[in-house]
Image (tube, rainbow, N blue to C red):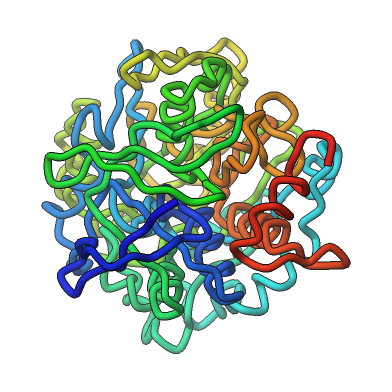
Length: 462
């Protein structure tokens, strides 16, 4: 085994260093594993395909990290757009900070209990809903209307530092200035680095190196060259699209089939007696578990709003952004589809998916009408949170381990069933649980670098 220390310019120098683990990807799952392991004294190498430039909040930066076709933006055969963030911190840089509770019973049915980690994460990150005084007028108008119609529409738990929100307008779009007010995975990456982790950005991992059924390292491209790094544990956390592609290239051909991507659509309408340019998105809403979808208020940046109006030919609403009420409908879609050999997304909406979207849209339109909104319309389907491509119970055991010894996965790809909710809190908790497993918390605790103990503890019969 070999390793090299990070030089001051972020590249690897020639100094010899052995890593205890390699983490591929820096979204909520990977960043949490790296942070938890380094806090226990492990030497961790993090490899991230994206960069780590300052979060500016500009539309151009968002396009580069969210909107490049074939890299961060994928179109299905029905022109449904699927997005993911390619940057240090992954999509969490751009998410809206909503901390939905994990479905504990569903996970327990697959041998995963993260109840303790949920409480631990909530306490660490200060998860809480916005106080009433910080709720914006557009979101409050929607909530009042929904409650008047009998919906259990309530403030949603958020990963927000309320002391940095000021008057409620600091959330921002495109990652900033919410970068300071909202938790995101880059913060855990920075903590891992403070504890000694090595981060290499612009490193695209191609495959895991496997010898005699055991993962020994990874192969990646960096600065135009193909490189290899080695460690006795490898954790792939490259996301619902990235992870299965890496695993396929490593010999696990069944990855990337039958997955979810949480389709969504929004209902929009204008009011004449309110006007606000920017609010915290997803301040309140309702999860209709039996119907298979959630409804929340939504606020998008002006450029995205303009694209939505143009997309559906509603140019008459182009300049109504500041007084538009918007409700997002996000569904729990069926597990279906596949990733192509080049990583393309082939997944049509099923009839059941379309029925859920239509049902949710009707309810959203009813709430808007009751709130006094006029000129209502809807935008085209999009999707986020692709996952379930490397499911627990299929390609992974309950410890998130593949059939290869010492190879684990920790991101949305591991979620074993259809989802339909923001996954971030779940991924943080899975990362904490995996780190405890790797570190041997409990009666079989083991030290980092103890290869013999690790091999025995992680063997299929161990």
